[in-house]
Amino acid sequence: MKKSYLMMAAAATMLAACTQTDFVNEVPAEAPKAIAFENGFVNKTTRSENSSSNYTLRFYDHHQNFKVWGYKNVSTTPVFDGKVVNVTLGEGAGSEIYRYDGLVYWDESASSYQFYAAAPAGHAWEFNAPTSLDDQDKGSFATEISLQNVSIHNDQGSHMTALGDAQDLLIAAPCQPTIGETVGLEFIHILSRLNIVISKKSGMAEEVRSYEVSVRNIQKEGSFNEASEAANPAGSYARWTTTGADGMYQATNATGALVQEGVERHVVQTLVVPQAVAYEEIALNGSDINADSEPYLYVKYGVANGKDGEGNPTFEIFEKYYNLAQIFGVTEGQTLPFNEGWENTLTLTIGPATIDFKASVATWATQVQKQNSLN
Image (tube, rainbow, N blue to C red; front, side):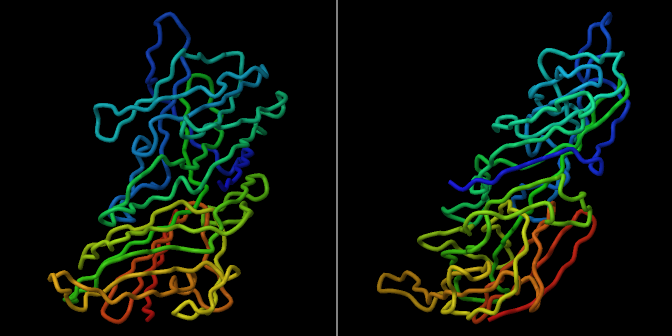
C-alpha cells in the first residue's frame, strides 16, 4: 500500500488564537485551574454529502477526538504526551465540549507553554518532542498515512458519497497562552481535495447510466515539510514533494448507476497530495494515453438507444478521456494547482453528444469559477 509521510515543524505563521473563557472540565474548588481545550475547529470540511459548498466549521462533524502534546518552559518533561481529548456536543446550537481523563493543571512557575495536536486520535501519530527548553517550538510529527484510505465514493447503487474509515490530515499550530487561559487549537487542512459530481443534461429524454468516473496518473503519495516554506493563506503546494508512482481515484458501477437530470451527486470525493497538474493535449478516445501522460479524467457512460426482447433498455456505450488541467480551464503552458486547503470541484453534465464541465476552485479566501464544454 502506498504511503505518504507527514513532517511537521512548528511555524509562527500558523499560531492559533488563545482566548480567556470558562473551563469545560470540572475542577475541584481548592485546586488550581486545569488546562482545558476549546474552540478547535476544522477550517474546511472534507465531508460533504450532496454539495461541495456544504461547509461546516464544527470539529465534531469530522472527528470526535484528537491527541495533544504540550510542554512548559520550566521542564523538558511533557505536560501532555499524546493525551486523547474527546469531543462531544453541548446543549447550545453548534457548541462542543472537550474533555480528557486525568486533569492537568497550570504551573504558575511557567511563563509559557507550547501545544501540538493532531486528529484523529486513533491514528498512529509519532511525535518528535523538543529536546531542550530552548527548543519548545521545534517539535515535529513523523507519521505515515495512506491516501487510498481517504477516497470517498460508493461503488454500489446510486452515486452518493459514503465516508469510509478515513484519516484526515489536520494539524493544529502551537499556542502559547498565559497561565489560566484555555487552549484554542485551530485545525487546518494541509491536504487538497478533489470533488467530482455528475448529472444529466436538462431536457434529455434518454436514460443515462454511469459505469466509471476516474482520475488516473495522479500522484497519491508525498512528503510534507512545514519548515521548508512559510504557510501561504492564498494557497500553495510548495511545502509538498510528490514521491512514488502515479495512482488512481475511481468510482465504478458494473451495471451502471442512473444519472438523473437536475441531481448533482458526488462520484468521487477524495483528499489529494498537494501538487501541480500540467496541461497536455490528448485524444478524446484515449489512443495516445500512456504511463507518462499527465493526470487525466476517464468517463465511461451509456445512453439508452432502444430495448431488448424483454423490454429492458439497451445502451450505447461511450468512453472518453480528458486532460484534468484542461477541463479545469487551464491552457497550454499552465498548471492546475492542488494547493493546501484548496478544494477543486468538477461537475460533469452528460448530454446526448457531449459532456459539459463546470469547474470551480475554492480557497480559504476566494472562489473562482470557470465553465467550458468539451466533446
